Length: 302
Image: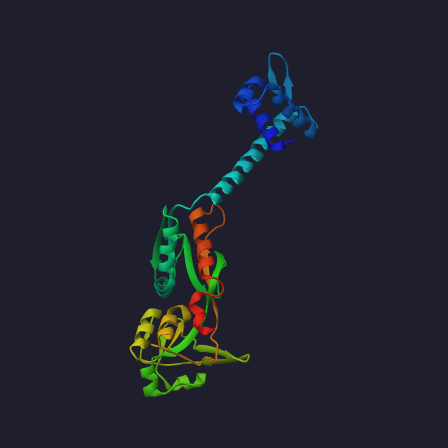
């Protein structure tokens, strides 16, 4: 027996007031309606309806069962609606917050590819390194590069962020090339005012090094520091997604390749799994597939 159908028949008989009217509404024969009712009563072990040639009324068991049947049918409809939403093409606006460096390097191109694939979607990028309250600022998704995820948010890991130390050939020709992290103390190091405040961290053969570098230029934006390095101002510690194309072109030189910097996760953060818009779910899936655990910007490392 299809119990959900039997419950729907029972509910319709009650709502319509007769088996014949319910059969018309459900596009069933009256005999089929009677059969579903009988099978439901057998399954529940109680008579649900008092029936006569002129009237129909709920039994005590029927009065108890009816609200539960309605609730189960509502849940079934919700699940079916969710499945339809998952299968439907995404549509609508999604507001996405990101750091300036990642947005310029890869996220803007990813957003362009997404709306190209799904023309009924729109992506609004809110760019900056400041802290953002997703609820207050109506942000659907925040892309964060961190190993310290806010526990009040739902986090999906999209990729990994590695970092490298680099400088221009002209700077190195003038000031020499460091071969050990402590050599950085003798150089102009361009620092991010927030991310570099606890020193530059390295690991080699399970041994850790922390170097409290100094330099004449610092900034609160990774792209600004990168541009200063490209102008020959000093050595910079950059995410590979920002530095990769300059390393591949030879504009920057990868320094201390045997020393690894801390790896960070690239996460998509959002507020709730409940009533999650299809456009948000689709964009997260799209980014996770596009970036992956071995992102394209790290190919120069291998």
